[in-house]
Amino acid sequence: MTAIDNSNFLDITFKAGEIIAIVGSLGIGLFTIGRSASRVEVSLINQAKDIHDMQMEIKKLADIIVMQAVQTTKIDTLSAQYTLLQRTVEDLRRGDGWIGSSSRRGVDGEYP
Image 1 (tube, helix red, strand yellow):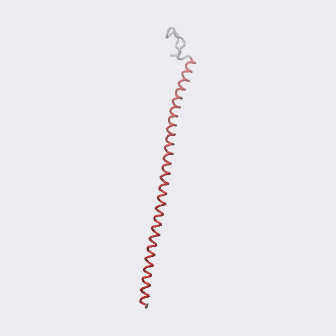
Image 2 (image 1 turned 30 degrees about the horizontal axis):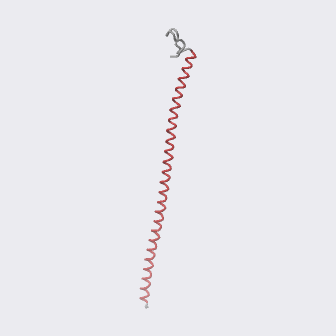
Image 3 (image 1 turned 90 degrees about the vertical axis):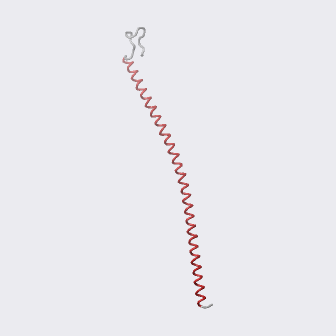
């Protein structure tokens, strides 16, 4: 081999090395992208699970709020009935509300 042949051989060797380096870089890049995509996919699946769990918790909280609203309504109704009952008993204690003999014959002391 002569000097020109050695130069040609080195050029071909460097070109082959460059091609191998480029292919290797592309391979590593694609591997990294694939790994990142896999991580993103797993992350999205985990987020979907978390969102679903949060939705279930929100539904439970909504049910609890509805039950509390119903209980509040019942308590308000019972309170109003209790107040009316107290007022009626207090009126009866004072003699208001009794049917006297002057207003109806044969009926005495009954509440209308």
